[in-house]
Amino acid sequence: MSPTEASSEAVQRQLDKILSGSVFVGNDRLSKFLRFVVEQQLLGKALELKESLVGIEVFGRMPGFDPRQDSVVRTEAARLRVRLSQYYDGEGAGDPVVIELPKGGYTPVFRQVEVRVETNRPLRSRLGTRVWLTITLASLALVLAVSGWWWMRHKSAPIAIAVLPLNNLSEDPANDYFADGLTDEIIRNLSIIEGLAVRSQTSSFAFKGKPRNVREVGKQLDAEYILEGSVLRSGQRLRINARLVRVRDDLPVWSEKFDRALTDVFAIQDEISRGIVNSLRLKLGRGRRRYETSLEAYDLYLRGRALPIQHGLHGYDESISPFKEAIAKDPSFAPAYAGLAAAHAARSGQFRFNLADEMSQMRAAAEKAIQLDPLLAEAHDALGMVHSRDAQWEESEKSFRHAIELEGNRSMSHVNFAAFLLQPLGRIEEALQQLRIAEKADPLSPEVHYYLSSMLNAAGRSDEAVKYCDKLPADYWAKSGCLAGVRLHQGRIDEAIQMLEPAFNRGLAPNDPLRGFLGCAYARAGRREEAEKLAAASWINPFIPARIFACLGDKDRTFEALDRAVVAGPFRMGRALTIPEFALLRGDPRVKALRKKVGLPE
Image (cartoon, rainbow, N blue to C red; front, side, top):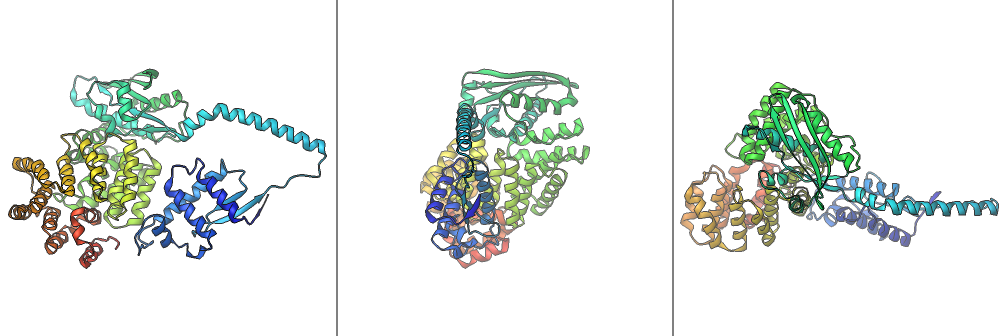
């Protein structure tokens, strides 16, 4: 075969063929990227294919986009090259035109591939070859027809599976943490197996302690298989029953009982994963690293993992102690450092803590986790948050994307990518895309629903946002603020006040964000004195008076309050500047100065 120059018509046909193939179908982002650069080249505009133009035209960046501050084009170009390679290695192997995107630029190259036909062989030989080729192709077609369902099932559509919380059969309810932590570990072990789409821990734990109907659970979690079971910890013995059930007909496809020494807990996890893999005819692949740690360290680690599951935001505060104790027992246990980094990340945006100290400890824990295990997704996720806090945006994006590459079903990596980088940089549509992916992996997660509502509000889509507020559990810490915020943006001020005043009358902490929503509602209802009083009593969290002053239309005092909030760092400031209340500040030169002060790009 030899390459020659391809005609414009041939290139256009090839482009359409590539974009309709399985490698690109459904990936609107990379499809738009490829179509843009190819069509610009065909129009003779190759010299205009600069990184800044691609960022604006393809990825929706604003005029003035600086590629040095935002690596989206370089990152997506690398992904596009990989997809093109996958296409030509597979379904496009025999295509007559090859489209390439050479490294170091954004101008595509087109090659026409000619197939040389042997014409000097005897006719009989050539006819024999044709007959053989016909037989071969017919056989291949038959094989493809038989295996087509398998390929579509296992290659294109991963099997959706949910792991329900293991029932704690111990007489001591305090052992709940062990059952919860073990469930979470099984979820994480399964999440990195190719061919499985594992529903995240938050959604699965919505069914903890509730009567279970497998079909109903499968419907709510959009799962085809359910793993359920029980655990009994008795002294130094561990008894685990587990079974995998097919949702559509309640058919158990695998079950196993384990009665082992407590020290065999890691081996049991491996055997559960292997049993599921074998039952569903998948490949186990590289698997998650199996750690050799002491039982005491692992027990403490499970306690730390369970606390945020059981107690939400406050659980992160409580988890720091067991994680540190686990590290003291085994200083080489990487997951404990990653858990500690996540706990400090949760505290790093709260004014009631020493934020500099939280960041220092978060950074040290994340870096140590990566040093001990470079393939630990949650460690790279934590490092992405650290870089975001330091306004190192390119490094932050690399860390988040690497975390997602390592464990794509981990919903919190997508959530943190959206909240710590994409929203602060004003990339709202991309943030929504990441949150939609998180929602698919974790359909019942209150955190995912909360962030989706917040991001939709920032995008001015409050009618969509309210649907996610309604999905939040009644006792979720941010439900009132979520609903009230939406009502404010819809102009339904009286409803917002009716929602917020009961909580305020019961007593709100001085740093509770609900004060900001109520003060804003008072301001917009013309109750200025009450709004001013709330602002004056809430300076412990400067974002609260900033919101109230913005709703009063007082730009000077809004900037004064935001100046006091600079200590919260670039990700908090960037997120704040996207909320609708601060729209009155846009265009004011003081915004530019404020962004520069915290390390946000202009």
